[in-house]
Image 1 (cartoon, rainbow, N blue to C red):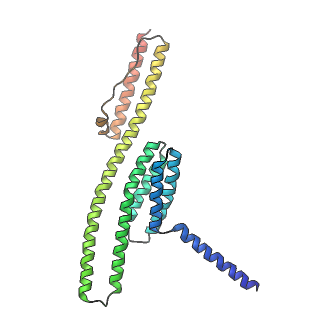
Image 2 (image 1 turned 90 degrees about the horizontal axis):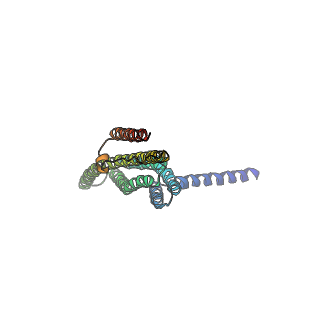
Image 3 (image 1 turned 180 degrees about the horizontal axis):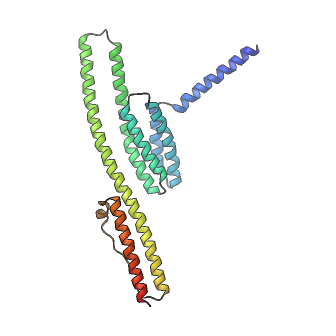
Length: 251
């Protein structure tokens, strides 16, 4: 009797464990819907902590999606999932709500493409499976299926080209965003320095103030990051030299 009771308990534990594993992992569609929902909620967040909370949930589900896709031939879906994961990582590494939202917007733009590519992939796989299992069909049916597969392949190639173009556009947007974040930080630093210089001049009874000028933002964003670093370094040096000259003239 004890042995039977022990076997029954072990069987229940095994079934519950198996069910929990399936529930936790889910399928690709379920996890992508969780990713999409949390990205949307993250964008709607009123503070950065709320954004990061939803970004972390989306990150967990997109990693599960990638794990599920590793055992399939859905390469395009996997690559898109990896891009989404990268944008989520970038959003989590930041410290600014606006920048975090920008990366979540980039991830959001890839969600529909990811769903589409997975549907196309599973459809093609189903078609191939049906073709292999229908070896006794008439030759005309096989030829029609082959023609359909070629058409689908052509459509996939077109979609791949479109996706490649979109990804290149995303890279450009990301580069511009990186430059804008850098410029904002540098402008804040210079503004703080100028305020400090002017306070010191005022305390020394100097009837003068330090000021600076800036290039057009569009012109600046056309520069590379290295060129921007050089530009702001020169600007800081000029501002400091101007302050020292004014301070010297107050003696």
